[in-house]
Image (cartoon, helix red, strand yellow):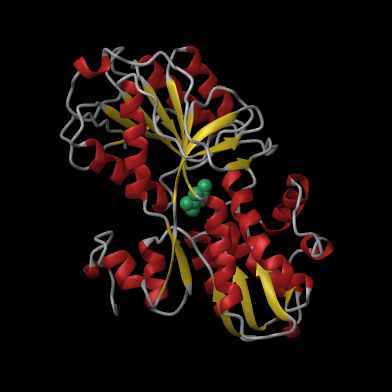
Length: 405
Ligand code: BGC
């Protein structure tokens, strides 16, 4: 279904649109993202448009005339609750601004993503907020936007290997991985040889590397001294004595343990991992799961294996289904990334550039081509002990969304 949402019109505020001045900011962190090599699926599809619930605009199937949209938002897929949530939070945050906006979904296709960007360009968008489906494939789309004088904000995931990214708004993704790994270390039951299963996100997503980098920095000493034994990656075992992995080494491990951010792929890889090992690699196990969707698939798979006595499994995103899993004792933790904060930072940044100002940034990320000025948001570990305080009392979710709280 295609719908378009528009927020109230005000061209007055747009007259002072910045002509892409170079940002100056207090940069305290540099995180490196080398170029990625995974190809995106090449399918062609029409732009995917979704309405924010609070708007009344009629469904529309043809592109609006030039100048009809101020802020364009392109998100990777509707198939994961994470990105539906971002759409909703953008709708909430933009309601009170004078800007007209449109959210488009790429549905896992870089070709659709490019079509979406082109559709926004044709509608006169001034700021493009884009979470790439594939970090390198998105470069062509944003280069087109840049050539049209549009300010490009890479959202949550960094677009790599191009100079056509003005800003990056993100959570602290290395800390996400560290937080997951620290939870496993803190909840390990064995002191020698406890089985550890590692899983990662899609190698087309720069974040998958940052999460893994953070996790490895905490887990590696425990793997090196034999406290944990990695059961599902010969590459990780081979590199167990190396604290700092190169991008290429990370890639080799990730290619053995990737879920591709896909629930079914996660289930399949967990199933084949458990089939490949003997019962001595089961018992009380630790599982690094990269996000909530894959964590639920992997947890269900491990729970169904009679030789697995207990497991501790991580997650990320605080998806409602995983919050329920945590309450029910089926997933141990999640990393809460407050999307309200990310959206707020992004809108503030978009407003700054629309008003001709230089946005505040706090970090720089090397995207393989340039140092991208970035605004970074912190994350919180959530398990059964603080789930109510972190997610209900903070107003993020309603208590009635869950049972057994
Ligand atoms: C995001 C995660 C998300 C994952 C899969 C990552 O880039 O940071 O929040 O779970 O993609 O969509």
